[in-house]
Image (cartoon, rainbow, N blue to C red; front, side):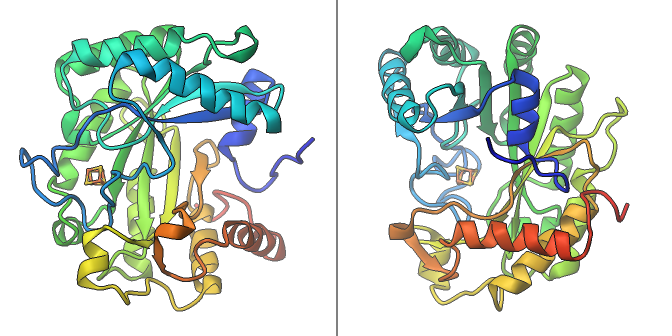
Length: 316
Ligand code: SF4
């Protein structure tokens, strides 16, 4: 059995404690689009995003009808590696609340009712979206879902700086994120916020300032449920690759590892850590050239935390 991480509150340890099982996500492309690609908010997408909409690992499904077979075949494959695993359905690609509530209901309910190998059902849902795509109708449905299943909603903030947000074509300001967080929190919905380290124009202090912003206490007194810290990858098919193909967000892997450790030390201990690096398929990666060495990066973060005798949240 894998050892638990005593220094970092990882989501895998959290889920193992909560469900007494290894919990694996079934990554799904629910056939949604993105308002930052279809022209309603912007065109061309965020600077770093590939055509697949930040879901290059996800199974593609266009309708509720083939969603269940995509889930079953992923679970079948994963069960070879983890025969006793339990599953969450992860709507990963594009903007998974950018549709009428009836369409969301059809797809999310299909995921929840899907019969997986061994007669299992998913434990719940993880839904990735933009904070400007949570209408009152959608919020009402999410609130209902949150009362009957395990749910978290992921918000792609990437940076708390409006200046950087404009330069990466995110197409909404920070106040929209803050408002969505307050509305979701008021309904007790778990929130996971994505940040990207290494965006063009940002220095170390800008990135740590984004970490401080998203981990402030919410009006309910809670913190957000989780953070995803991404290393910026220059990916084939992104606008960043066209505009600055040689862009290197960090001078070395060690510099990135040091930054992540500093970030972890200012993240409250109850906030779960879902990601600490990038996860771009190697065939799509342009830069940084060491980014695909995910295991080395994670080992480096854990080794530095040990060397410093550091713990998540010990610098708050
Ligand atoms: S990162 Fe998200 S919001 Fe930005 S273009 Fe890609 S899918 Fe759309």
